[in-house]
Image (cartoon, rainbow over all chains, first blue to last red; front, side):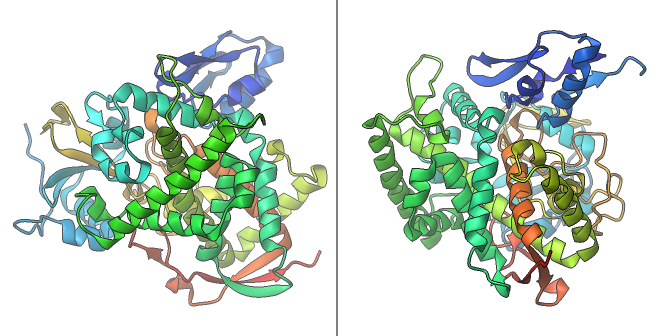
Length: 70
Length: 440
């Protein structure tokens, strides 16, 4: 699995850090919305389900996943 | 460069403002039908270009702040939000304020909101009895001001809230009409009422801020977030700015949410088969999770598809605008600085390329792949920061409501229509529905 994020769309709602804190963090920006930071672009198999939930429940659809079989 | 076609019917001095004010929804549909992707019209001097179709809408949403200004296009909001707040603040301060506003709606805060909304619904229906009839437009205006103030400003504020506060909000909201986008300061009774309401709201909210500043109690709601938020230089927001953010946050969610709830309930009443399936879905969830946690609320496929279709057919905001600051170009057309560009959410949601038979209410539709066709909350970096809260609120309201009561329309089905007198779409009042307690 590979992770892509579109920072332009991110407003720091922080759903992702609730679902997968090992993979995502949200960092404050100067004069802009907080933005997601991917800590691990190729999460291990054990984390992948959490990552899928983070992508699914992100209110702004910031996170795109490329599954290995695609 | 290609020329941009001009919508027919312009009057010499005022352009299209008269037709636009009377029915801007139909006007925008006509503009697109007549001119295509780019359609120019004139609102009492403000030359505006409607951009239609997914590519043009993506161009609109991806435009940079330097080229396309929201602040310049939304000066009608300045007398509502107050001086120095959002569209009246310098760009860097505006960004900080919007960031502080969204901070209050972060996921970690949102988790506290679901039970608050459910409790408000319980209190609301407590004296309904077994059956009856209500004007739900009125009811939802009241319920959503309760939920918004309770979630955002805390229980102490909600408990002390008076009828005056609600009246003030209505006056404030009634000032937002098409004419306000031409000149929000002209002599008009609706604008006088708007300004008096804004002044009085500032008194009420400032008193509350002062009370909190002098108290040792620690609060954990949106008002606390606004009061402790800082600009880049470390300075705090002034009381006027905090008040402005409070007003703006409630304002953004009140008419939009109450209109959506009313349409939601009306469409549910019109579609008993789909409603039964939603109730079944709810019963299954409640069996596992009696208190209806935030986690339970986020996965309700049937309820969500129905809600998405309500937002497609009845998007609360019809039109979004930006002022062109630097000359731009789209598809071989020059769009010079000084003009306004607009997109029609209502029109986009009726694009047959993405929504076949667009006039048919069909919750089984699948969402288009592109992010720029289905846009009830706008898109791009300025997408409505309250979108997650708004959806959570609708799901919490209808989860509590539908399990207890069933609903039927009272009047002819086709008499439930949009009220076009304001800039936010909602059903025309009275929106009468009959309710009946469910027997389990």
